[in-house]
View (cartoon, rainbow, N blue to C red):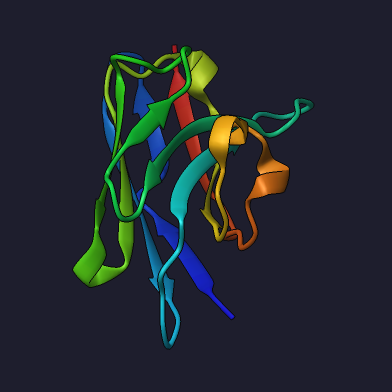
Length: 126
């Protein structure tokens, strides 16, 4: 069993920055990847970014490319999402998740991820 705990959300003005963290607790932790998804009210959960745990290869959604950066600290079992130049459309609940198997081209598919955090609210005011 893996528990994921997100932190770092909050209220920020347009153009501001936030850094989300997600710490994983498990006796042994060796995911294939860790990622971030978000969900706005009335919308489906959408992919934001993912990072391969061993290779450090990252994938970022086109909507946040150039503004968001995903990184990880293997020693701390922690993944981060640095969010800059935030826009009102970035508002939503951000979820951390783990992929235990190969993602291939389906890294945007939430069904490929297994454990999920409780989510952290990000609100960007205009």
